[in-house]
Structures are given as structure tokens and as C-alpha cells.
Image (cartoon, rainbow, N blue to C red; front, side, top):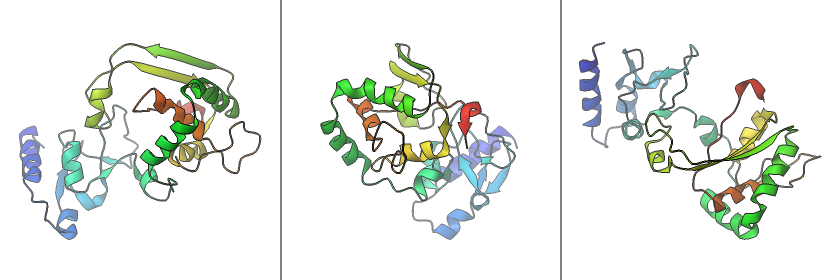
Length: 211
């Protein structure tokens, strides 16, 4: 489909009233990354990352669809399903983080992440202070643009499992609950990172995971 037509479709979607019904919303035709139009209910997902997600199954919305528009029409946000479906966060994240920071001194940050690396069976542990500014385009969320400044990178080469991912999402419960042979009891010490930052970002080597 011609890009001009796609732009017109996006403009029409932006003009929709907030009062449309769920049935009307599900029947909306939205442009996808191939340039075609598909019904929203067919599983079209919003994705703003820079990674190729063309796995033959995922239907990604056209890049002209903004995060604001995706939220307006109720489009599924790729990557958030697991966090929103069946994972118990254990309470309000902001409250949990505030309470945890009262219990953990900022000096405990490094020992907590060394303990996490040990629990993951890591052979290497590295810390890097990156003073470069990151790109402000094609971010997972437009709101992340203001945080593309200096970063503290904490790295280890341990195996990252699906349970570890769920543990990160279970902020108030801790991903080490029920595990034996680990240093941290609840896994909440990792939240000490918020002494230094407002945003955490995880980068995973898919060749070094157990999913």
C-alpha cells in the first residue's frame, strides 16, 4: 500500500473519539509493517524496538502507529503480555521500591549484583560506566527518550532462564523464592539499583538462555 494512503489511515485513526465501543475498536483496520491493512482483532501488536521480530507469527503495526495511538485504540503492546497476564507483582511497584530502598543502603548495590551473578553460575562479572548518550529514536517507549544519557552497565555471563525473567517482574515477591543454594533470600536486593537510576534496562544474549 502506498505510504500516502497509510498516512491517511493513521490520521483517521487518530481522529477517532475515545467513546468508541470495544466491538467497534476490534473491527478497526490498522496498517501493519508490510503495508497491508488488517483488523485490530487479528492480533496486531505495537512494537517500537530496533530488533527484527519477523518470526512468521507476530503481526507488527506499521511504524507510523505511535505509542499514544496504539494505547488509544487498545492495541496490544508487544513484550508486555507476560507482565500483564498472570504474574503477581506482589504489590504496587513504586511502594515496593521505596520500602526496599529504606532497607538497602546504596553501598550494598555492588554486593547484591555480585550475589546475583553467583546465583546465576556466572564466571564473569563486569561493571561499566558509559558516559555516551543513547539514540532517541525507535525506543520501546517514547517516554524513555529523556533517559538516554549516561548509563551504569552491570554484566555477568550467567544463564538467564524464563523463571529469572518472571522473577524480575515479580518485584514484590522476589525471584529466589523457593530456590535453594542461592545467596539472596528474596531477590529484592537488586532493587538497590534505584539508588542510582530511575530506569533499568535488561539486555539478554538469547544464545545463553534457558527458555
